[in-house]
Length: 323
Ligand code: F6P
Image (cartoon, rainbow, N blue to C red; front, side, top):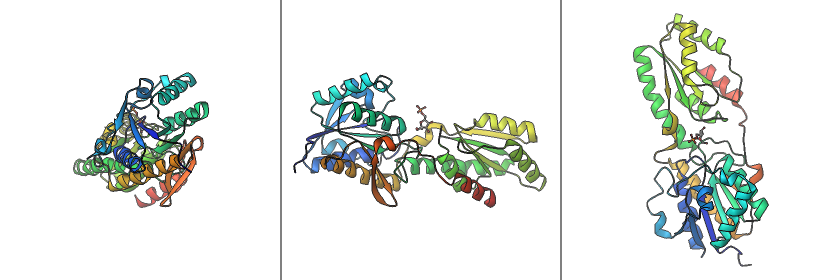
């Protein structure tokens, strides 16, 4: 049976992440290969509401596979948040003859795409684009692996100075509701402690461990905190007050969102982009595509939001054993 979809729109929404361009490239070229037209929607849902839409051809995505950010730009749109906004977005899609939509974004973008599909029936498919790795149905989200590597590069450097000057360092990484980046970075950096939103944290124990270690000659400490769990500045101030040790803090911030995507992110994006187009061609809509255990995995968009990782407690215990 011939596909009902003749022209697809693609947008990136919410926080950008390394690998989004590789996904845009894959969606575009795979769709063109199967004879579809492709439209790039600029600045996410906001650009859709403002009809900021450009035609995409093979060349539009030349030399972007290795670039961070998103060539389509991205935004967080308040206007799209209402059902009225979504109906307007659907109207604009129809006006531009776009009969299928690929949304690359995180939790909020997925909720938007799910609701757009519900209220308008516009065939939509989501790709997990967020450094936070907090979406269901996929082992990894696009950008997370690169963000972890980027954070590690800085933390390895911080360790040099921490060791040389015998200091405690508190490093704040991204992750508002998700401590995934913080936990993975802490394990990979060999950090002494990590504070994440998913588990209660006992400051008294941390202060006691630092003071005790210091007496035994341990001279430097790296403590990672997820931005949504505790601010690095506050943690550093506590430590200085409670232990008397010289403490510095670093907020890595948006550095983690940029840069050259890792091989892992490029491959993930490339596979997911093609899978999204396959779904639309096969008349399977309202879905989120991921990779689980190395295989393409498809779940309902409305079920794909807000993943809380299992085994955070076990990872924390491992971190402490290895410290
Ligand atoms: O969702 C991705 C993310 O980078 C979060 O880790 C962070 O809390 C948030 O976006 C920051 O958003 P903004 O760039 O709007 O400040």
